[in-house]
Image (tube, rainbow, N blue to C red; front, side, top):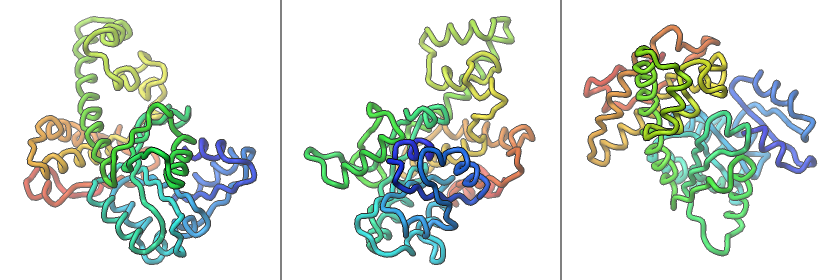
Length: 311
């Protein structure tokens, strides 16, 4: 996404970047400086101090609160700027988004808009991401709307921008989508196992499913059998893979939201248990040894569905 933004900007404009893992910033600068100037900063506060448009994406709610609200390093510590636009692309709960948005507004630091994305690494590389935006697009677009639209289109497909109406509603739509995609991936894995173990050629099986009622985006792009779909993580030593542990975060968001709305999340609860077991398998541990934090609510801990822990 950062590469897409740098390539979209006029070469005279500076792009400021920050990541908790500085080698990523250094590698990004080395590989993309030919498209325009890049400056590495050391805190989110520094980014917001220098930029009128900020794009953020972090693992979960605690990290969103930290980068925005931390008294020492958070973006709320930047000078007042009512023109500053925060495009927050993390997949988190709606309550956190609305709370942070309100605090940013009250502090006169700018406008916070939730805009989770979908499409994975391939769509990010090809600038074809879907953006699910917690904002209402109006006729006769305001200056804010035009700036927001231009920022989104530097990374996304213009035919896949969805204006959901207000803060938190983009996230509500994304959570609903992920509820399906996380669960469907398990169905695909089990279905492929059934067919292959029964003797069907895996490539033929995938073709049958693709052209039949079982066809899904996940099956076409994240088929778990190596060598079946050329661009799938399984066919590329999992280099493009979404962390197994992050499925737990996405599913927990769906489970929590459903319960808050007095719905029974039976499918996601079953999927959560499968991914929870998988996430503890040595083959699914982050190769660089870094920690992965799960977003588990107190409610889940109390009802015995899982332990609150750090993997």
